[in-house]
Length: 136
Image 1: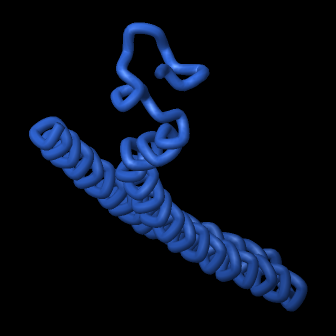
Image 2: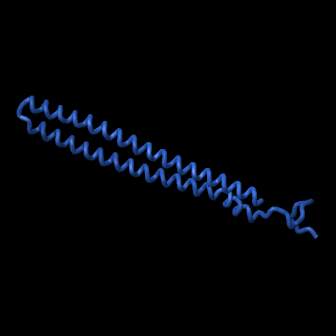
Image 3: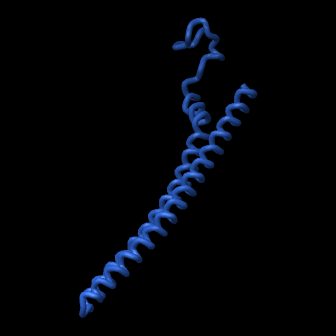
């Protein structure tokens, strides 16, 4: 007796069970999801560090802007105004140069960490697929 809804020509016991499909899909995609989460966590941590660094830098530069305005307001001669602006721009060039180097290092570190996480995930997925093919 063939159960209702079974495929003709395929034994009842060997028919694919549609209720197992989500579990099968989960087992196939789970390593990729875990890997994506690892990469995302690395990227988030790196971006948080970069944003914090930039925020601290901008805060320091705004303080320098306020100091410039105070020096200009307190200046009595054109030479004092000129010296205040010269000091300000010299310091600004130095600060921005240092900050670009720091930001470049942070971005390079972030990139290498995310790429290392992605590579380890790819290796885990490849190993998992190899184990699955040997079992099946």
